[in-house]
Length: 103
Image 1 (cartoon, helix red, strand yellow):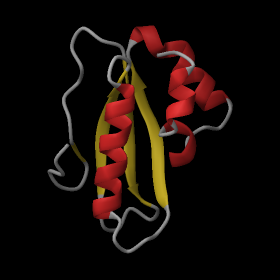
Image 2 (cartoon, rainbow, N blue to C red; image 1 turned 90 degrees about the vertical axis):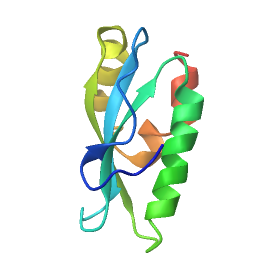
Image 3 (cartoon, rainbow, N blue to C red; image 1 turned 180 degrees about the vertical axis):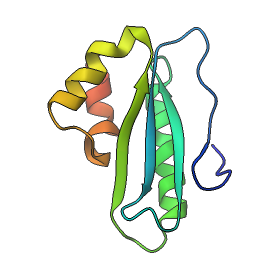
Image 4 (cartoon, helix red, strand yellow; image 1 turned 45 degrees about the vertical axis):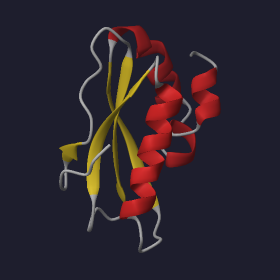
């Protein structure tokens, strides 16, 4: 994944796969922010790449904000479960263990 500037996508919508789209940024959205897709087939790699990018951009070592943005039809129930449980934080949405339940 490559950072393309504030509020731009860092990867393309997965074709032929289920996905969830997220927004990630520094807590106050002052310095960096991007959209990213997490695909069902490649969720572990996508999450790893997103964390790598966050760590590169978050050199100020502040809190990270992650928001659920959108989903494909097949991941609607998982997306809603994350929302329902208040999993709009980096340690929930970007936690591979949560994805292992469905992958």
